[in-house]
Image (cartoon, rainbow, N blue to C red; front, side, top):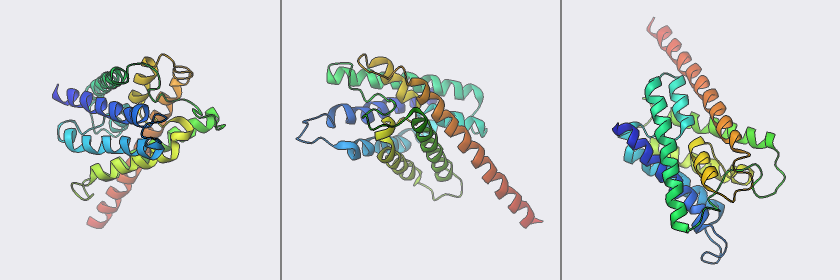
Length: 234
């Protein structure tokens, strides 16, 4: 159970800090300008970075159903654990979003994911491709940074910075999800979200598709590496 509770706490921190940066520190008029998209991007990245070192030794710090599914596809986690991880990640997401709502005193403006949230003309197709590709990149970084041949102790930095970069690019398109638990919690709790529930399917399906594709690509990478090693030994 400690692994599941670690995932719950980690997801809670991610939603509270990441979405909190958007809802509180990026609000219009806060300290004149607020922290802006760059600040929100950094908040999400730092949240993952600190959680990798905080709960990584306990649960591996997935704190994202898409990551857990990708790990399950590559047989790095058992089916039962994967299901429990996802359940507790969703619970953690709701706890984080609930705490954020209490902190701001209302249930609107919780950084809900939506297609073209800022009216810049992005289409559902563009939003889907964005979420899928960004999740794919995120998972490739995670697989590489946590590989046994990767430099020890630096996985959290690589993963956190990659999530920061992903947000810097994709916030204008979708408010950046790449994490179904993050999207589900705020969409349900944000009672004034225009498209939060309408667009929710995209922020569940697209990250999962991207994660599965990344898992399959990484499996092919590992297979080729094994073949080369066997040939060298022979």
